[in-house]
Length: 475
Image 1 (spheres, one colour):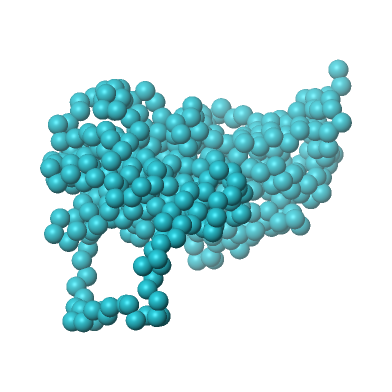
Image 2: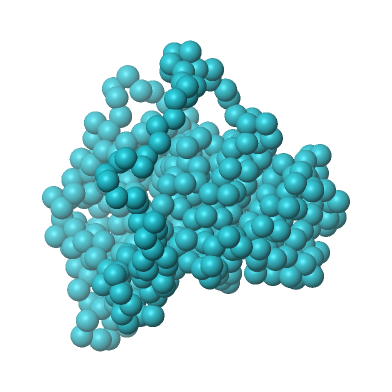
């Protein structure tokens, strides 16, 4: 066997024949790390041993087993996981520093322990006392079935697993652990993958399956640190969105072998840790009385996974004193806002060239669906006219560059949710619903163009002219 050395980038995994200052692939500096490689024996495949008498089964004869799940009291977490934690699964969760991933896992650990299951919380970043202080802050009573171990040696962690025999194992974080059999530093691709493979064997043990949740560090590009092979290795990849200091946190999965990846879970961060938002519609719209109508507000329904959510979009239009008006949107891309304003100016005869426009959503949710375009425009129109929209009215449609309303998918499900919540009117695109679809307590108003919607909601201005806004009135 001949040995040689290669230099592998710790950022992207690219291999180089010799050391150099920066990686040719990702252009990062000082990320090349030396590794020893053993060459395969010469003579082609003569050195490969083919094993005989391997047990193999037909797919039709294979027994299908439904994996049991550990159901927690956090319904939003269960929703994203597909109903709970699969008992023989490996999950990795990542987020920016301070988002609350360690706090969430500590809360889940305590809840699982209260169900009579054992939990091992192994941390390579925090000491036992640090974990205890955080637990005392977010948990009322720490259960005795939670064991904690602070060390970056995975060999010692594997020994703790044999000693405690836990049902759930938390690894925080996988990039900080090392196996003594490998000389690389913590966080290197070799160490991270070998540690993950060792934990995978523990979880998939047929005699004693265990659930493992690993914390994965996030890069400055908001991606999971390490090789892409780490994502292929695990069963589920969860992402917790929300900057440090933000109240709203969103949990979703980019990969899940046991459920859909479209589900989204909502949490709020407080002194008691992360609290699930079981009814997001109440969180993402302002509760107002029937006669308490304000200008610049419009409602729509977005679809997050299988769940329709009623969302409020707010806008503020003001006169600008600068050569170029401002276009500010916390929930939309700037180009998207400019497109909607251009449609208003050209198709609805509403000049905004000398007006600042600010758009945001209640709760801070980003608008990802085109179904919210009509509501976004109507909120701007409401602010521009200084006229409020009735609180029982909702808008669900996309807008084309021609000013025509476009139908959106799963419209019936969205309208059913509005009917359940007690709303009275909803504006949709013409032919957006099937002719056989009927509703008992909500009136569906189909419209062809944006101008028809504006005329229906606000009515015609005197003498066919647009109503003046307060800033346009003469003193």
